Length: 225
Image 1 (tube, rainbow, N blue to C red):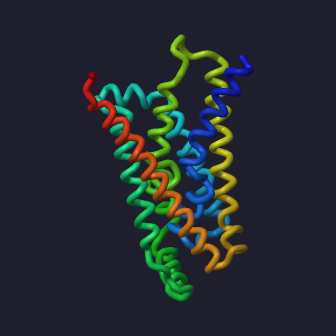
Image 2 (spheres, helix red, strand yellow; image 1 turned 135 degrees about the horizontal axis):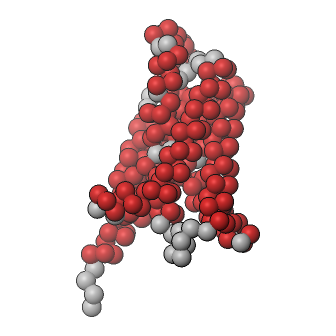
Image 3 (cartoon, rainbow, N blue to C red; image 1 turned 120 degrees about the vertical axis):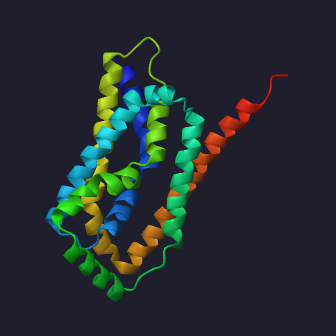
């Protein structure tokens, strides 16, 4: 039982953590809401963590049934998710840098025009979905969910899923809370370099996911000899 628990937890953590990329995603999310206060960032981190937990849980438990209902295969989901992630990463790579003066003026304008309720409304879309937990994470979660034990759910398997989601959610919360501090340590130039690096990683993850889906689709087209 303990072995099944460890295997399930490690499978989900190692499969989802690189795709979620909480460190890079946290920087990207904070770049969408500049100059937020410490209290707003704490509330934002908590809301995004809860939303991410719910999305991943539903994807693991219900994702395969939803795909079956709509007749969508996992390779097609990977292709679609990979395209979205790759485009998002490419757009971030091509996004022009703003100097500190322009960024400060724009941030002040956004902050003045945006009440707290508006920030809360953005926590699910687009800050959680697709920036923190996007199509790639959902497709991986669905794929891992379809590999559940064929004999049915076991206690060790359920506990492993809960433990893995708790670890992933904790990593999202910690990265969201620490991104502001890291941003101050890195400075403007260092933050831009890190953002470009994670944008490249995001693009590569999207291309990898797209290639996996295309490979599965191409294999399915091969006729038996």
